Length: 163
Image 1: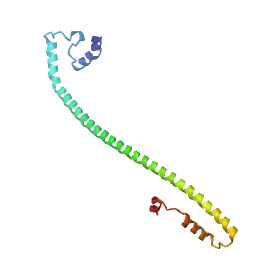
Image 2 (image 1 turned 90 degrees about the vertical axis):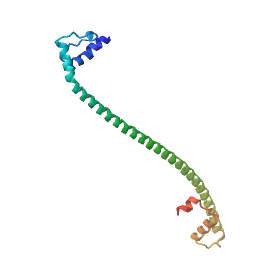
Image 3 (image 1 turned 45 degrees about the vertical axis):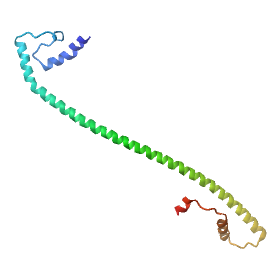
Image 4 (image 1 turned 60 degrees about the horizontal axis):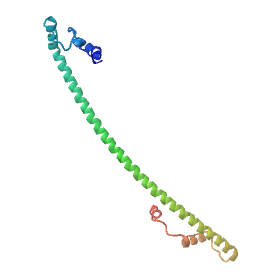
């Protein structure tokens, strides 16, 4: 199987590189017979040395360029990893802020519901008092300010700082 592969794949390549020689997969292990064909292949080998050196230098340049490109890609990958870590940290911070704001909104909603309930009670008691007594001659605006000043609890720090 290996010999077949060698005959099919390797020998044609060798024949193209050394056109005057008689290359056979089965005769690779045998010593060359001295004569004109052996001298011809030696001449071809000497003439092929310069192109092979050029090929080697070309390959070395490609390896160097690939190494430089690989280094640049590694640097870019490390920079991208750092960016991903920064974005993950930013996401965690935003999630924390979202949680805090959700809690604050919940607290404010509860406080708003409590204040609305108290306002309703005050309005009901004011409507009940004004209709029954008739002595309360204040305007609705003054009554509202009086109710707000007596019944309004202290505002939270966030609401005070917002103004």
